Length: 158
Image (cartoon, rainbow, N blue to C red):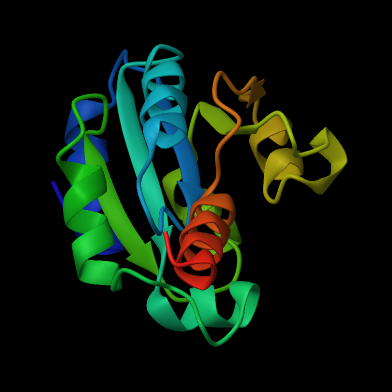
């Protein structure tokens, strides 16, 4: 379900009793098998999976003016349709720090490419007894690699 932060806080107030809330975030620009695998592994770490998606403006600031490829509402819809995902919300900031503070997840998840000391909000989650998990990748694929492959094939006339 795609929700606002206010809606999510009301929902979690009702639903989180005795359940572990897992939070992760990302751009999720062009969905691929790596995203699906990552989100399934994140969900396995708890009961409720919340996914924060960077807004279009946020993605542009992080990835450059040519991104995102897929607009935020469509990215949110696609992520929301994945079986492991319970709630999706779009955030405007460059990092999910404010979401993490507001949601107070039991488990904060990022990919293994993020060193613990660089995971935004890790210190906050650890301060109240939560855990921070780094998920190993099963697929060597990224949205950037997919875009580069498409551009190379176009350039090669394939």
